[in-house]
Length: 231
Image 1: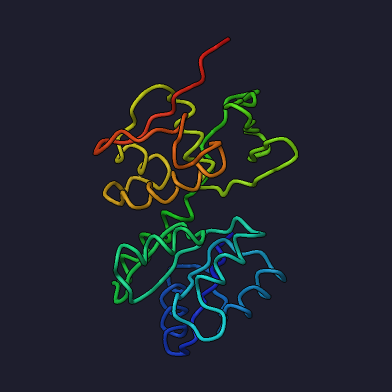
Image 2: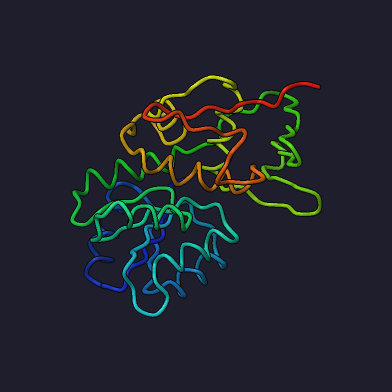
């Protein structure tokens, strides 16, 4: 089955160009002129990936991305003319899987699309048991975090990142290794991606995300999951 891509942009010419290029590559393409229309189309039919412009009137791309993430794990690539690191951080923090700056070449965008569509959950070992970090319990099968009666759903990227560090405990994992394991072999230098997703994970698994006990930063190198000592 061809992957289904939803192109969300308020500029008709951009939508036409994107549809033509993606259709040639064999993708099934739908269009939306606004964030509101995109949410409605996602509600009515499943899609595999959303190409979402940041700068739209009314509901912005960031607002639309947050709304999408509240109920869906569909892959989201944000498209924008903004190229500051802070803009990338805001897009990733809103729930995007990737970020492409305009103007971009179509081969570059197609490569990012292929990487996002290849995104399959990292394999769980048979019978993966829940992990307890302090008062937090991580249920790998349900892909969620619980603390008492509070349950928090992990995004696919958050879960894959967590699962990778959990399966390599007490070892410093370099940035490049983490990026390629979770995003794909095309990645390696996008350290800001890791900063955003590690920060989000800490909010979900640490009692004090500003003073983490388990998911630790190794400055200039990578990250390490420190397992709690056995009692």
